[in-house]
Image (cartoon, rainbow, N blue to C red; front, side, top):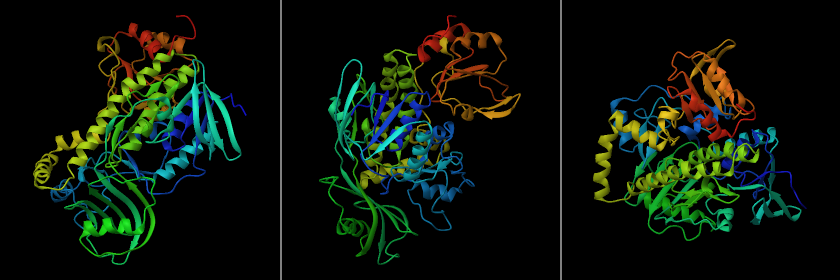
Length: 509
């Protein structure tokens, strides 16, 4: 069997793989997703997305209506409790304080930053629906067993429900997790550090709900998280990592961790859902090898604390998706794909460093105790809190767009979600980016600017509007939300920037 219609084959149908498929399909590029699992897996995973990932969802019209708006800022006493790493469901500090983040189990505060408090599986369902609407073929229960590539295409060997078959595509994207088969067969090295912890995330029933205070607690052996109704647990112990991630998790194994950390004889009567994890941190040396690209956990793995994996993977997907589509459509040369590694690899490396630091700050012992007390004092200061929260939430990211004299002072920064006044009403920048196309905002009513961009009208949207909070008279925003060019750079430099990112014009200028 030969399947030659898909220009892009995505291996892995989790949220990152589905997001990547949607990003490519927005530009009318045929995509097939090959997912080994026959259905969505409902074991404990991410329970929400924060920071830049919320912006990503908004700019694609996904998960609309589930944003949690933060409430009243906390008192000084609450701030002290949060900074100390305590989070208890009592009158002093509500269990689910909106806007809270944590670093090394020490909670940060960014009340103005919303969350999408939804299980990862619901996000997968929403992305799967969007992918189907865009014409993506999602094949569940199809395992890729091997592939070959040459200068023109990639051939994939697949084991499907009806037996083995082979498909061909122009490009292959591995979104198949930390033990990525695509990465291993591509020969891309995956250096890093081994784990030093063993953790469990579980929904379980116990014989004594009062065995321990609910909340987040640093213990002599690690960390214990206990939340009531229904009982939810996270445990983290320092020592040897799990012998095998694939080994079945027994009730007794999890119960032992719970007893050691709580110092009680609590009995686990039923385990409903459970996941075992560690903190190994590794990163692919490059995110591209010929016609093969790596996205999400296939490109980087790290500890789960503060939930960076999904946020980082979605950022990868929106960075490379439009670039891959532009190359597949013939608008741009293949070297555009090299900017995926140059832009995102440093972000992944920084995330690994942040996660290693987080694990180090949770280790038991008086030396770490002293360091945590010092950090607690710093986190009570708004400036330090905002800076660390920006790192945890990926709000600090910027890219090198070239000479600022040619690209403008805003180039490389994430574009603000401006409210624009047009003749047909008010619209946000996020709403204008739902198509996944580049966006040139003319906020100074400059017909000369629009004339310069007109030859790219087949792939760049030009919007003229008024904006009371305009940071510049004109901005060119890439599909991933980052500014590629802005005034006061000379408008004469705009055509070269458009060509760099979106290819030569369809018509001669």
